[in-house]
Amino acid sequence: MRPGIFAVRDVNSLITDTSGDGQLKRAVGPTQLTAMGVGAIIGTGIFVVIGQGAALAGPAVILSFVLAAVACAFSALSYAELASSIPVSGSAYTYAYATLGELVAWIIGWDLILEYGVSVAAIAVGWGGNLNAFLDAAFGFALPDAIAKSPEDGGVFNLPAVFIVLAITFLLVRGVTESARANLVMVVIKLAVLIFFIVVAFANFSTGNFQPFAPEGVDGVTSAAAIIFFAYIGFDAVSTGSEEARNPAKDLPLAILGSLLICTFFYVVTVTGALGIATPEQMAGSDAPLAAALDQGAGIGWAAAILALGAVVAITSVVLVIFYGQTRIFFAMCRDGLMPRRLAAVNQRYGTPARLTIGLGVLISILAALVPLGTIVELVNIGTLFAFVLVNIGVIVLRRTRPDMPRPYRVPLSPVLPIIGILFAVYLMTDLPLDTWIRFVGWLAVGLLIYAFYGYRHSRLRQAATDPAGPPQRPESRGEEQP
Image (cartoon, rainbow, N blue to C red; front, side, top):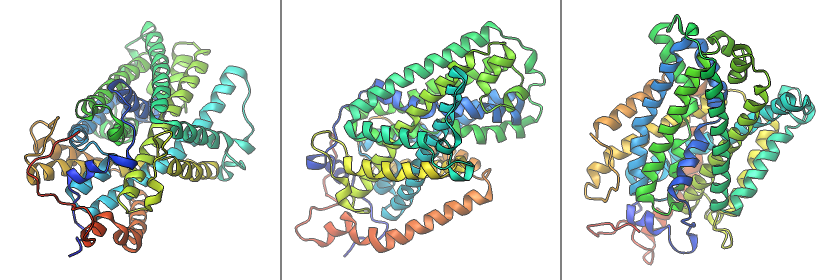
């Protein structure tokens, strides 16, 4: 009989797919993986949303950053367990395939295509805006609107956004080692910029701006946390590099949890320093709140150029890591037959899915050239939160269905902590606007049609079950040894 739509991929068969002609290079170590997490997290979040959060919560925005980090931490624990146990590309998509079945895996994969792909385009648009801000602050020059903005924003063609997407595409095609090294350099630069801000802020620190601490009470703190959550998105991208980690069992949990801890520390110290030199109103009224804090609070106007440069570098590394995650998720879906399998071909010279990467790069660059930023933050948030829910459920399910499976890292107090992770994600999802839910449901409806007419019929899981010569998808072995 053909497996149904909730058929589950065996973990052994998933790991077997990572060897042979379709094998990606295992070339990334713990430092580079952690830098990928930091590179994906620290971007427009700390450079932009800190002002939006301060407008809602006042000085209590510090608590909002902590609350958002705690909400992410429970899901990060679940990502760490599954990434170390199933070291295969695809992140939440692959974990869902191994625990909840093909249909759920398709839904989350299709969701992640939206989250990662459209996010790259939107972040690239933001990169162009920050590049103009840097050119203006440092040299008194800015690119004309005609080649720096989308048609809806009064331009013709967003050239900077296209440039950064194509440049990152070229880097990703060249290899994961080169990409990881470039990201590590950018992470060092943007952390240095944040350290510069922290040192200057605490050298001019005053406690006068901390009263009243929570003018909007608990509601203000939680509302700000729902927005600030966007600043933490990215640690899950580390799990997309599972198949290219040299020692996934040890390195992936360290990188996922370590990057979240590092970024939380920098976020809390940065926002505390900013409030020590500027009022929440001063930061809320600026598109560059950290630069505004230095200019209006500390009287250091020339520092705006340094902060603008830091924002450009920060956003570049976000584009790199998120686009990397997009290609690996798409690669896993193609290899499983739910998307055209020929796109999963690995270039023998570079060890990357070059054809797939170039195709996605061209599509995303067109999107970035013509579409404004819009409401992408909410769309990205709902996609990420939905993935968090399924990953936490996946840990609970796999503990029951495969209790003897090797788990180099285990979530403590399971299923209590995964359930808390689910509740946090659902709570934050309920704070998102109705329009976001409508767009999200519409996107999933389109995905279900594609699965019904293509993915279901071309699934490798289903073809192997009906082909007498095909390899069995559910081996009867009692144990599983991982490479």
